[in-house]
Every structure is written in structure tokens, then in C-alpha cells.
View 1: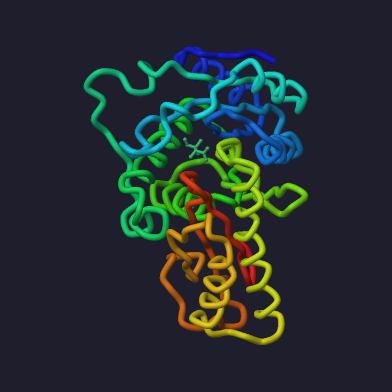
View 2 (view 1 turned 45 degrees about the vertical axis):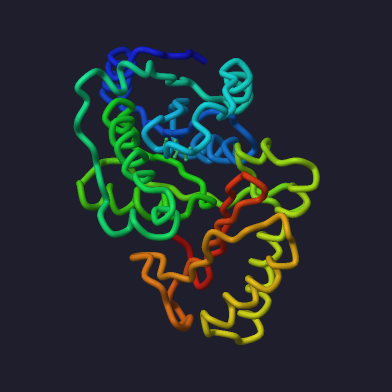
Length: 285
Ligand code: PAF
């Protein structure tokens, strides 16, 4: 496995690999790798000849009051994880090459980026789509792998790729959970033991919704109220939003219709840590 830090080097390598007929699988990350990322690497390994993982903490997707400064950083540990999963290259670009002086081009997926997490994290998805576009141009992947935990991110990236005729096929992989049901996230390390226990209510609320759906409940308001009621039992948890939306346009639905894939997404602060989780009913993203 090789770690590449220079963008021109990664670009030239990707061009050569393509010319030689290799299928490039790409897992974009911000590091702090966990089993969720490993599952993406594993899927990439199955579908591609060459696996590239990028590690880049993208400053422009963090808001001014967010956790950019304390976001966990450990390249050596991340490299060990990548090596154990058979990754061929880590691309860990230099900040000055990603955002040189006078950088002024951004990619915005309008509409989709303002809803759900976008409503409370202004500019977040502009940062994501800009850096992912740039990484796609450098790594030139045939496939790019994203976790469904960041469901809105996956929907937005799929739309960006379709709208702008980008090459990669976007592969959305299942959420990986800890034994207690908590969705894996690099931000889970911020939680105290008490907060961690409380945070499992997000997963439990989604399970409750699935049980209600299985028993025939279709009204979004009823499902949402059931989630709110359960989450309210955990004083350490404060809901940012619960949304029940169509997976394609992220428009709210009043009732879940047969055959129409619907995303039920929750974001909440557990202490100071903002966590997200979701379930998709009637299909996938
Ligand atoms: O999901 C993430 O870790 C980030 O949003 C991504 C896709 C690597 C872009 O910085």
C-alpha cells in the first residue's frame, strides 16, 4: 500500500491505471476510520481491481461552530486499517493543493442541499459536493462508495453525478452498527458513557417506526410522533429534526405509499455531539 499526498501524482497514477484497464474503486473519507469505513473498503475490494481511500478533513464542510479543530486525526492508525483491508493507495492530499489561494469554484446541488441536515448546517453540502467533485477529478474512479448513514449526502452525490454526467457509479452501502445498535460514526468518540447509552434511543426510535410500519401504520405524522415520544424519554438527547421524505427529492411525505421508497431520518444532539441515523422503507437510496 502506498500513501500519496501530492495531487498531480495521484492524478497521473489514476490516468495510468485507467489506461491499463483497471477498475478503480474509491472510498472518500475524512479519516478516523471505523468498521463502517471498513465495510465500504470491503465492498470496493469486491467490485474493483484497485482500491483508493482518500483521507482529507475538508474544512469547507464544517460550520464556524462545528468540530473542525477537534475532529479526530490519526493517519498512522488509519493507514493500518486500510492496509488490513487490502487497500492499494491512500490519497491524503495537502490542504494547499485542494484549496489553493484564490480557490473560488464550488459545486452546489440546489434544493436537496438545503433540507434536513442542510437546514441546520448551512453550506455543509456545498463543501461536500465541492470536495467530492474535486476528488473524483483526481482519483478518476469507476465506483465510489458511501455509507447510508449519511443518507442525504448519498442522495445529493447521486444527483450531482447524474446532473453533471460524472463517471463514477455511486454505491451506497448499509449502515454498520455497534452491538447496542448505535450507528458507527467518527463522532461517537466524543460521547461520555452516559451519553453513549442515551444515544441508542435514536436507533430504538427507528426500530419502533419499523414495527409500527410493519403493523400497518402509514401516516408520517403518527410515525414521527412515536419517535419523538421515545426520544423524549432520554433527557440527554435533543432532537434537531425528524424527517420522513421521498428518497429521490427529499420532499416530505404525508403517508407512506406502497412501492415508494421513503427515508426516515433523525438528527439529534446528545450532549454537545450531533448524531444522525435513518432507515429506508420500501426500498433503498
Ligand atoms: O462522509 C464523509 O466522510 C465526507 O463528507 C466526505 C464524503 C469524505 C467528503 O469530505
